[in-house]
Image (cartoon, rainbow, N blue to C red; front, side, top):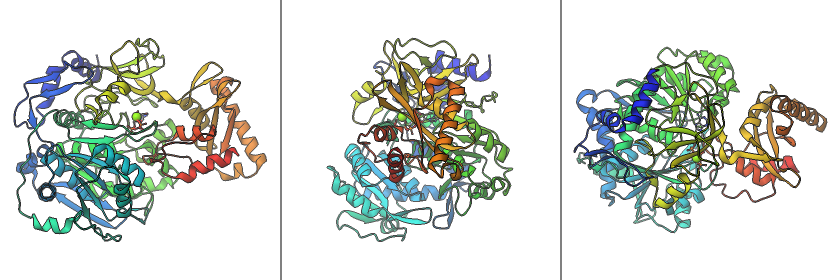
Length: 629
Ligand code: ATP
Ligand code: MG
């Protein structure tokens, strides 16, 4: 048996023993009485009776050994700022923020909504919340008023922490007017709004409600704020899913289970050691930011790099420049960022000394083979695909290189991580599928530590949504399709609601997309199922051509479309051939860079696209509409 398989088997046969050992990675103020309470499925409580604090484990615990080590490196190419904070300095900043929140009336269990750009204060605010037992809910700073208002109404924060403005690709985006509008739209009103003034935009204060952080920060200097010891299952935060497939769900995370799961993943999956530097190029508004910009690296005594900016400004070498300058050992990004780099000069990958870098992790969407090969070849470092969700909080499927460097298989994120009783199940019978047979990626009860404990304020939705999708089986559905091969590697085949039914044949839109992408003339593509009187549904492709010349005239487009149809026909068969392929310059995506197939489908069917609050660029949807006309 391979080492990762042995670890996985042990984690499932003796979860109490396995996780009790892992729990020793963090400090407990009161030891837990029981590792797992599984008396009320599908709910699971980990480390019952144990009391701990995430902020203590992320900062205070390290002060004796590494007070002068860098904890946070902050780089903004938007404001040309670089700053580092040692663990001691981070402790000071977080304490000031915690004292301020307490001064504004925040108590244990209260929610604090954090609507902020990528500035150090955003991280201070998160850690300050966990320090005082408040539940943070970070809302991605790129969201506008309507999305923000919906989250204010769901989380019902006592205080909101925000800033005057963000900046995106050199353009200032004022936050304050968006926030004021959101509070006006929301039914729930926060008592106080704490604002960080970056001096990028006007920041008129609403008297009585709005507070300038600079004044508070001075006022509370020197004030000690002890960590509030939380029972392990008390919530640490609420984070809403991306809304790629529907209405965002408020994922509630516990305290002890999350801290243990992250600390364990830092070693087993990310190969991070105390003193290492990790650069996660994501946003604190996403789960990757929560787990691997903020909490994971700090729990492990590492240095974390927080970056405000895009991967191509001032040029396409900026990420690598940061790696060289700060001696980054571990990097984490998303396939979408790599696809952006792919459009740049490949020489940029060679401009900087990357000798400190050991591994590049990618997650968030399928990592297609050409992109994986391109980046791996370009930087000459192993690229580690890993599959997980906002709900899980840490990787579900990955090559666990800290345990053993199993040979990766392109197109697969790897094998199930310890703790996850992952099954590929038949969506009709609930039975486990044999190898190489497509089914729903499901996790048998219980979910391991770190995974969502419930939907915020709605236990019923947790059961209905996640635990009732597969019949005859008590399992959590990921809502993704997958197969497992004979060697145990899992391949993700797309989302369960991205399946279309053409004349009785069930086809995954992802498979058709992969086939279209294999044509060298295709830069990017989305496939959706569109209602058809005759066939039930037909596939339609929306494609960005690599070379605009190929789609200049109507005749060019027809010829290119014909070629693409032939490609799919040859690879997948005639049933999978799209009814039409249209050409666009941009595809609608969420702010996290994921394709919004449901919106494209609605437009293609002449329906209202519905909730578009998470869309990145609404004009992309207009283009889809125009291409159909
Ligand atoms: P919503 O659930 O609100 O529709 P979402 O699923 O996009 O939004 P996230 O939790 O951010 O929100 O994304 C998790 C999903 O992203 C997974 O369920 C899967 O579909 C996809 N995903 C993540 N990592 C990978 C990966 N390595 N390979 C393939 N797909 C991935
Ligand atoms: Mg999801």
